[in-house]
Length: 207
Ligand code: 5GP
Image 1 (cartoon, protein in one colour):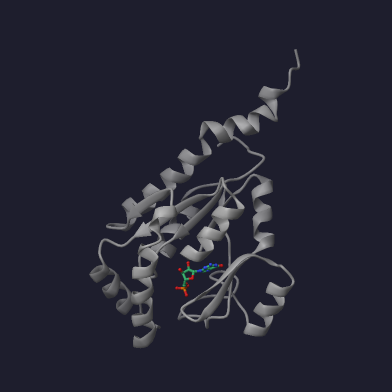
Image 2 (cartoon, protein in one colour):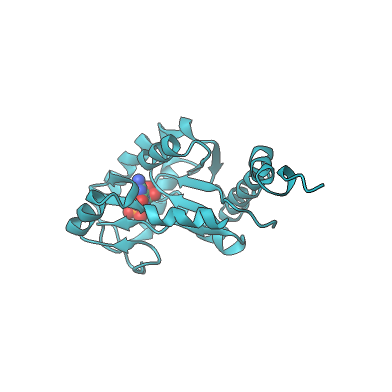
């Protein structure tokens, strides 16, 4: 991979239980030059989740202080909890690294408004029945929370129109390959390569 001055900002959204986290983590472990933005949340950690790896788990008071100080590039309330993307995470883009924000559709819209060249990817479960099965088998969520997530899933599916790509997670390996291909293709987009090159080697007439 050629070194770049500016990375590409990716947003990946999906109804919870669609397999987004698994896919994104696989892509990041397979592809060089791309990392995951770790969000802050007021939600309690689920079984197996680790501080600083899955989220930065903070209190409502801490969240509100960070929000007041303008430390989030976007934030939203999802299923009653607060989630925010630390502005500082975007600094990696200026080091030539691609960044993936795993955020909900409200956050995706805010990112699209602030960064017109961000690439939005939506991961779709094969069906709502499959989604329901996955949410129940995951464990760690109360029945009421599962129902709220299913209700929210329908609302999120209605927001798909502002996304650039849709990947159906029928089979995890295939969906992982598709998301990785999107990242690779976006890196090679003529507009991006030329914008960078015109400011660099190709734009400098050294005789
Ligand atoms: P979960 O509680 O299942 O980890 O996440 C619930 C939802 O919140 C998911 O759709 C997830 O993508 C979203 N989410 C996680 N972090 C952020 C964030 O920083 N901002 C926004 N807007 N949504 C987030």
